[in-house]
Image (cartoon, rainbow, N blue to C red; front, side, top):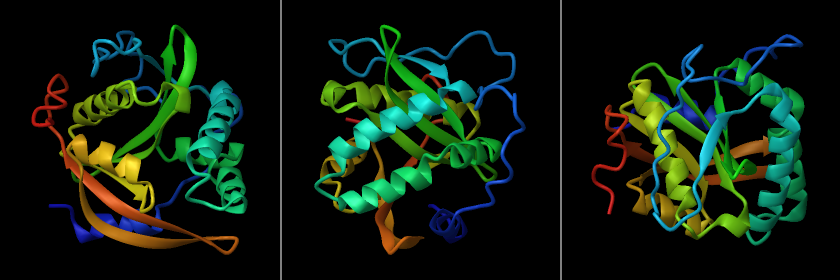
Length: 223
C-alpha cells in the first residue's frame, strides 16, 4: 500500500536541484554506457512499431513542440486556454526541463519510423517507488494500442530500478485517460488539489500500480 509520506511528496513536489552545466549531455540513460536498448514490447500486433531513444538536451525544443501540439488538442475541453498557456510555459520551460533532468527525471522519445510521436518522463526514488511524471502521444496516433506500448516501456524501466510500484497524477476530468490507466492495472488512491500559481490549480487523482521486478513481465495481471 502506498505510504502517506510518498503521497505528501507527490502533493508538494521535491527539490529539483540546479540546472546542468552548459554542454552536459543526455537527459538520462538507464545505465551509463549501456549500448543495448531494452526490448520494445508490442501491446497491439497491428499497431505501428514504436521505438524509443533517450532524450538529450538538444531535444528540449522537440519536447516543447510535442507538448504544445498534444496539450492544445487534448486539454481544451478540460482547461481554460489561459491555464494551458500557463502550464505549458511553467512545465516546459527550458530551465524547468533542465532542473527536472538534474533532479534525476528520465526522459525518452517515442518514434514511429524515426518520426517523434510522443514522450514520457519517469523517475525512481528510495523505498521502491517510481513516479510517471509525463506520458504523451500525438492525438493522431492515439487509440491504436501505442499508449499501452509506452506504458510497458515505462514499467520495464521502473522494474529494472527495482521499483515495486509506480504512481502518477491524472486530471480528474480526464475520463479517457483514467479508463486507460485503470485498464492497465492502476487504481485510485487519493485526490489532490495543488495551487500552481497564476490563479490556477491542478485538480488530480493519484493512481498507483504494483510492478513486477521482472522487466520481461510488465503486464502480468492486466486484462
